[in-house]
Length: 86
Image (tube, rainbow, N blue to C red; front, side, top):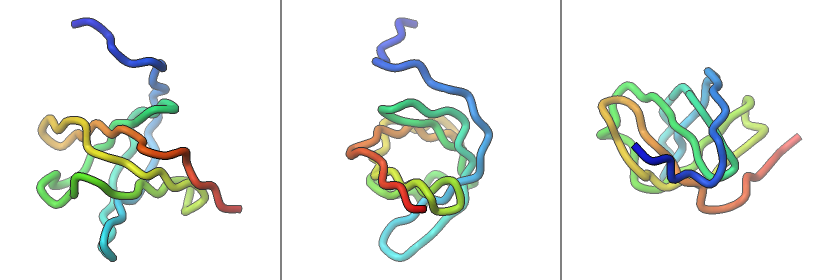
């Protein structure tokens, strides 16, 4: 399969949160790049097409759109630069 990503993904295993419309769901961020990420969730049916991925205990927030879903793994495209809070 041909690699089409602009940036190489960095493998990580960090907790995160899927946040949309007042709802929050836990996830595990498996890999990340400047353009997107892959997350694992318990039930992808509850993940909306656009949401915020919250990482680093709320220090980093990415606006995301779903690029693909395979079982419990979801590929994300970042639609804006990350917001960071200190």
